Length: 258
Image (cartoon, rainbow, N blue to C red; front, side, top):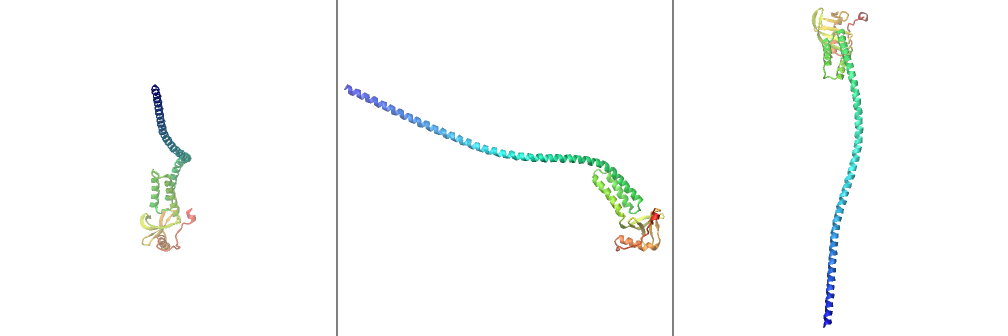
């Protein structure tokens, strides 16, 4: 009986040990699985972070490459700007030099223009007395223009040259106009005919009196009737009332002109 009890005790102890070992083994596997699961979760999280860092790195790399391209483009643009700035600085230096030269020329040309206007005025007064009001008014306008600050020097010089050109053209033109002249101390309304600077004649409106300007005496004088028809024809030609043709005019001889 005692042996049976001892055998049962041994069996119970063995069973308890077996159950304890099985329980321990089960607990250990569960812990391993749990740890493994935690490791997997941690690994997934790490992989997600790695993927996110990889994507961020890729984006940063692309942005870096884009910035590099922009920097290279800016370098090219800056080099071009440097060339343009250098060219503009050179042009500014040339303009400064030109302005200085223009200032010097302007100081020199103004007295020249004044002398030229004086010359035109003197020439008008010494020339045959045709279109005197018009020519004197032109000289007066030139003098007024010289005092104006709103007129460029180039325009002033152009107008002075224009006056010279007009005076020069008078020597090649045939003109007729109405004017009041003094004949023997009496003012008379007449038609004046200018043939270049060769001859200056007049004829009354009724055609009864014909005369010329005598440069030797500086006065108007009547001439004989032989030039009456010719002067009348010349006046009509100058006014484009008749076709151009030859006509006779009184001319002061070379000996007398001296």
